[in-house]
Image 1 (cartoon, rainbow, N blue to C red):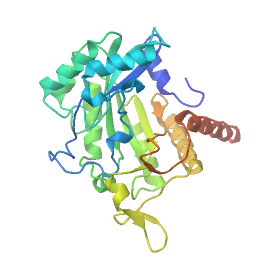
Image 2 (cartoon, rainbow, N blue to C red; image 1 turned 120 degrees about the vertical axis):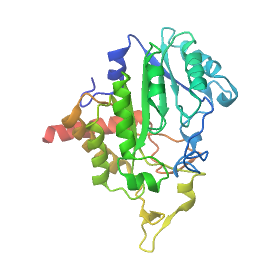
Image 3 (cartoon, rainbow, N blue to C red; image 1 turned 60 degrees about the horizontal axis):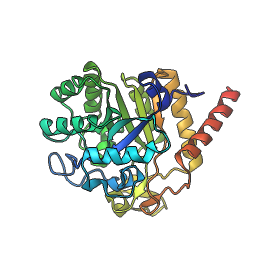
Image 4 (tube, helix red, strand yellow; image 1 turned 180 degrees about the vertical axis):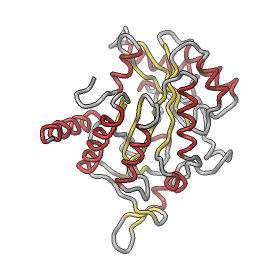
Length: 315
């Protein structure tokens, strides 16, 4: 366990023996708030290229032109040269990975599990796109399946403002049904969404900690090129950043470290068994508008751990 909080390595070590690695795959899905099912345009901050690698495992080819198994084999090749004993989790990350015909979904999941040394699945999706039938099918696979839901905020006004087209109640319901199906579950949140105060962000963390989740994943709001957020943000007459009439605060490194310290302390106080998978995200430099911190994820974590140690000494 990490010195101040349970991290994702701890979570994996509880469930798997030996070294594990996620392999991200793009299965060609869309999102229901993008394709017209429940909305159009997608989330205002989303440019999927900013967090879904175009190159499988860094191997130098377009993942979108390859099958799921081909992407996984390419990712394995990248890691196996250095870690021949590594085993893998197929991470369905891009867009909404349960948004489709259940038969086709299961075909893709089984294709991933047919790849040698792929021992489980991580399925990233929305809380409003998982029904009990699918959860039952996933539980019946008989291999580890971890569900990750993009909740983003616990505040419905915020979710509406960024065009998520779901509610916090749907998130809480999805978590409860997933746990009832016997599957581990994590939630993803973005800190600093338009209109949100620090108090609101902490409320979201506290609400998440009250749910029976296994992991939580955080990152700072990033303004990415070719998004609605980038096109429509501006500066008010009094010099404040705004988006559609809502205050838009871009964190400095120091501010965000301070927020994450408060989050860690709140999480440990409420439910220290929840693993914190990450605190930041890194969009490619050619797509990122702000904040441009110039830090890798591990460098931010080192800053955070130092601040946690200082806070701990003062308490």
